[in-house]
Image 1 (cartoon, rainbow, N blue to C red):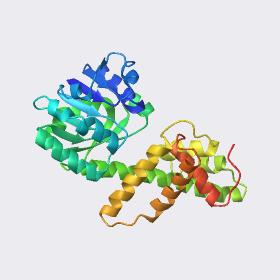
Image 2: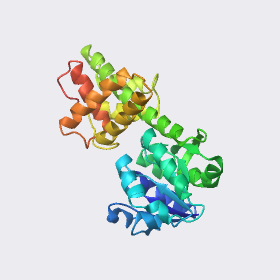
Image 3: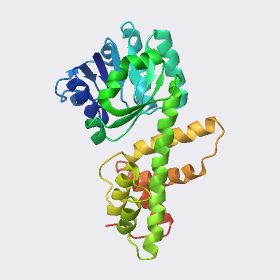
Image 4: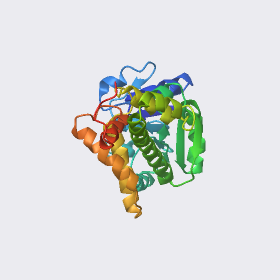
Length: 292
């Protein structure tokens, strides 16, 4: 297929090579042009409008504002070829999804929501879990692309919001896991069991899952340099909060996590991995010392 890929940050840059390797022709556009120039085999584009001259467009941008600016405000949809399908892989708000679906319908552009679970390393190995919702005929058409980018496609029906809510709720669960490990390790250390000892047990027994293992390792080591930025994690927590408010649902644990994230950002830690919120949880539990 001829594919236009918008947004080649750490995730997008890891995904594009798999599409190229599978034999697809991929042209790329990024707000920082230099990022689009260093992907072997990809053709740099001068504008997001040019991306929509392809059969399929894939978008991996940071938030609602970035998507609005690049896709809607730019007028990119007006440049779409006939039968173009737009795959939105960004994590965005359910409210914004409704607006995007309406705009795509008016422009006669297919719209498929396909947010992913996985970090750049997983993307590079085509090990993403892709949560998909949209018109069945559009999903069937682009399924070969999901097959080369991910290990499994999870279909959630025709309403694109379903995929986005699943992604937001899933990220919320990761933040709750980080909070749980922060608090639990604070308790274990109070009785002489180090965070490293405790989390090694937990992440290899009761909680032997990818997120617990990955972020438990960061917490145990007190190392938060690599991974998913705290500011992006806070964005997703706010999306979950707003989605809950829209449906009059109370998420009390999320408020605790959000407060910890806000505190960490206020301390200048926004560029650290989002698991650094566990440091705030440990402090609230009464531990003053930092992990080594």
